[in-house]
Image 1: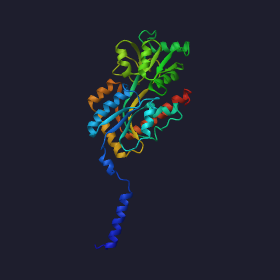
Image 2: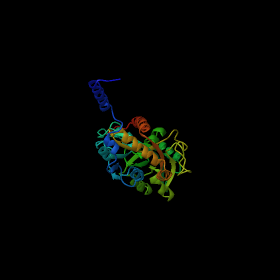
Image 3: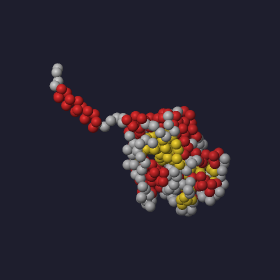
Image 4: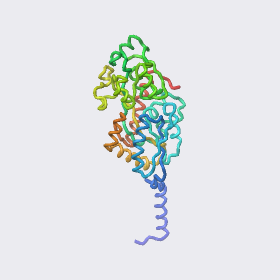
Length: 330
């Protein structure tokens, strides 16, 4: 079949126009990614669970991507300082953040002028794992069970204190859920970090802390604090003799924080997907799983799409708990 040259030219031009206007699966710059070091922001101080998870993941991610993944700690105001910085960073695949239930689910319920939107300003990459807390009291405390604490608070409302690392942290949310279910009230004492709360707990300045297992474990093993219950649905392999709060008399109690990786919104989807696959592969490594569990993190590894759904469900769940407690954003 002979096609006139002019008609053939027109057909080629139409095909070229379709190719240009259609969204490409991979742009040239995406294909070349990564071509330089990647910054991984931790919006909390060094030494905590978020910092430990980030350093573990970044070590293996650097090897798999062939580029350094550099940790930057930007702590401040319940993770808001570092999270704001990443929310407004270029969406080019060279900036990541270690997000948590605090930074990417509940901060909007505590701070009106947050400076970022945890959904609109971020692209979820991977849910690394779930983090449980443990209710601990001083070794010399007169309380040896959760039931005794509830009885004390029923008899003398507001008579006990619990330490937190700030509003919206896992310690604070655990305490809020505890009060909501038991119908009690505990005075919150806010510290700049969980380690400071543990120091005062050991010294007897406060009555209890719902601390992460990783932070509390050395104190438990050293008999400096007593572990009364864990906040997870099931008992933890790392603390097999410690009951769940539900078993200890607080029905339907379940509070788990989480560790995830986010990129700025608008980061090319092929890059987000690649990062999700790489991190899932890292989390699946037996040696990484062992290290995560030693930090009190139960490995997960969900990728971008299921992580999006998970984040939205967490925002809805904790938004209701916070609103029901009467807390107003400041």
